[in-house]
Amino acid sequence: MEQKISASLLSADMLHLADALHSLEQAGVDMLHFDVMDGCFVPNISFGLPVLKALAKASSLFMDVHLMIEDPCSYVKNFVEAGADMLTFHLESRSDPFRTIQAIHDAGCQAGISLRPATPAKALLPFLDELDSILVMTVEPGFGGQSYLTDMTAKIAEVRSMIGTRKILLSADGGICKETAPAAAKAGTDVLVAGSWLFAQQDMREAVAWLRRSGEASL
Ligand code: DX5
Ligand code: ZN
Image (spheres, rainbow, N blue to C red):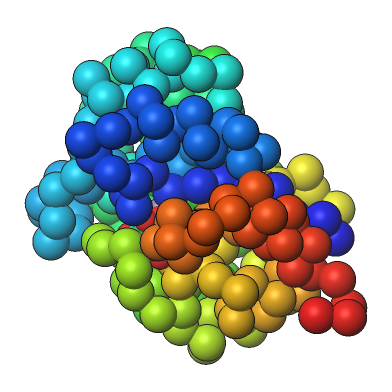
């Protein structure tokens, strides 16, 4: 199954975001993965609404927004107005998941749930019929550049089988690189989120093309 590639902006040079955006467009990524951290849900603080607004205005890339914040429901409208095309929040956050999904849909946006590594796949069961996307964290959320947790490959496969015939995009986020992408993709992802590895490649276009095909049996 050919993968869609969502590039995590967290690994870009913050002094030259416009250049990063244009290189990602030229590299042919499908989405821009925008990690929002509040210093409470995760022990790190990244970027937020004004940065998303500026990027969305400057690009037609699909804005894949990953909220690692305690109270995502309160910020749904703001992020959709700032240009999010898909809003993914954590099941472990304080917000009520049903209310949050509803708020995202009411705002005209696609809704996703993300799971920390310790949260079991079956926690998604009550929400499957409401979701457009599921993001399996393959590292502890909070930082780019960590190593893929190999135990998460089985979780990806479990979520894939739970999804069944529903139209839900399944993404893996964290530690995706040449060594780990084939396992995640073969376990059933539709989208690979890639940050530090992608930005470290000389030829980003070639790296994106390679990741796209990483689910092929021969790899
Ligand atoms: C981690 C973030 C990830 C991260 C991925 O909290 O949600 O999206 O930026 O970066 P790499 O590919 O470096 O693990
Ligand atoms: Zn992320």
